[in-house]
Image (cartoon, rainbow, N blue to C red; front, side, top):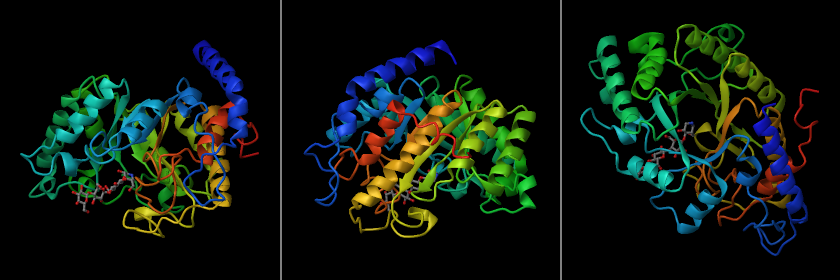
Length: 389
Ligand code: G3I
């Protein structure tokens, strides 16, 4: 273990032990904004930045600072060391037409983060979603390659030296998969693939590296921690590395559901990616409380939902336990983990609205999950961290 981390772990441990009673008690008058019977949560104990800030970047996502309250911006400063723009740097919002760029919100986010000494992870350069059709109109491989290069070099180049890392390609692997596809990359039939072929991936990394040689470049996807999609991700990552793509790491998005978290698979996937020499980020972490995945993955809740039934104490406890188990695994893999980012600040600002997936409730109050995550650092449960046993 690197001495720095050892001393950091000891420093953090000592800090938390000193604060331990406040953490463990957690019986204060403050509610979580849920039903009257909801457990009180200590709103003033050590922060997740205190607990994890020396192990890996701990982040949130949002198109800050516009329409964020001063209370919310204070929470971000107190708790996080990195911010990911949720939408404003995606191809559609930032570059809706060939000769139209919307830099106002990206510029404001970069300025706010620099003013507050918070790192930035850029999201995302190449995606099948939220991308203007103009990229693909009347395009053959040569034309689309030039459009891709112009997009990446303009956007990455604008923030050269200011944005530490990027999701270069997002969600290129097809959903599902089976024993036959698991031995292949099983790429999604996006316009990028149909027009440029599989070269679009290494080319995107090449263009991003040329635009900012110091930026750390990631491949980002969901459900790649398990099953056929995990095996396809390993095939793809090995190919990119073999072709000399300047890839630094892989983002496991982490849109999970309480009671259905694939802990053992996550544990193994982090080891698998690290064995390729890659860093791992948990790039979009949220853990819904109720039922099936919310948001665009089907099921209840989601951005269009209007119902936000307060979670029951049992739901909050189950969520807290699963978050604690996840962070025990992240502590175990601290040498390989680059960043853990929650996909949203609070339960009011989540794409899985109504599923209460984050660690601050709709009133910006810490939930039991918050305390459980900090406590996982204070008392890392090594059994929890070895779910395969
Ligand atoms: O900004 C417009 C607004 O002007 C308009 O009035 C409104 C009407 O619909 O739409 C607004 O844009 C919405 C945008 O979020 C900002 O709120 C888009 O419709 C909506 O589709 C978009 O949803 C985002 C989704 O990606 C699709 O891009 C979610 O906020 C965002 O959390 C979600 O994040 C993705 C990651 O980028 C990739 N991984 C999966 C994750 C969840 O889908």
